Image 1 (cartoon, helix red, strand yellow):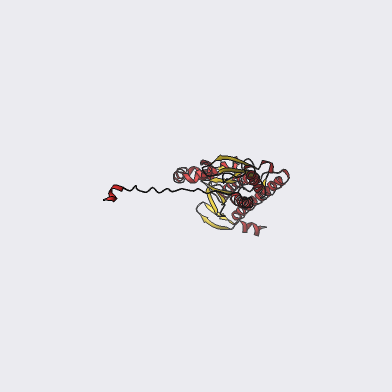
Image 2 (cartoon, helix red, strand yellow):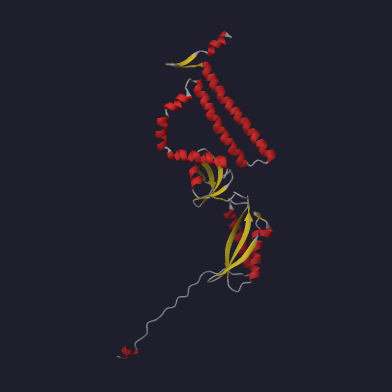
Length: 285
């Protein structure tokens, strides 16, 4: 027992009033491992709750992130106290320094505060599809300072959280997992309107990613300069890859139009050449 006590009290580093012994390192490791264990238990409990009580994935992730940050702040405070650093004195002594750093890192602090807002409000969740600055992005993770997303070109994008909270952002997944989209198409004058509407509706619903057939609707919306203008409206859950879905539906529409001899017109321009009148009197001379 005396040997163990002697080993634990063995001095590793000594600098003035601060002395780090073996038991200091042991306590720091215990704090670190305990924090990791608590976080693991909380994570398992959250996902078990999500599985049995249908807790939203984004809500579970946001709650876990907040708990993780709080626990690590507490753990770091205990570690500093263990090695002999008084946290209260450190904060008070570095107040002026923190003010200076804060002035230089305003944008970083803005991103951090925005991250806390996103995680607490849960207005943006994991797997949400957002439109930011004209780019469609699927959110993969929400961090304290930045969030990570995947755009439609399968390129990973790092997004500062302040960009999400301060700019106008369209959340395609906020209220429902399916969204209404439309495809515009024009056909030649003289085409059978009822047949065109039938073909458009059938073409849309033939795609496997289209849901709610009764809500799939085609409309004659305008008499254009060179065409009858139609719209086909449909609901789809495949929000992130909707451009691929639209392309497939357009191919089906084009195929059915060819089978039914329905023409898609293109703008035409008639050019009239006006010749200069001939002066008959001058020619006689």
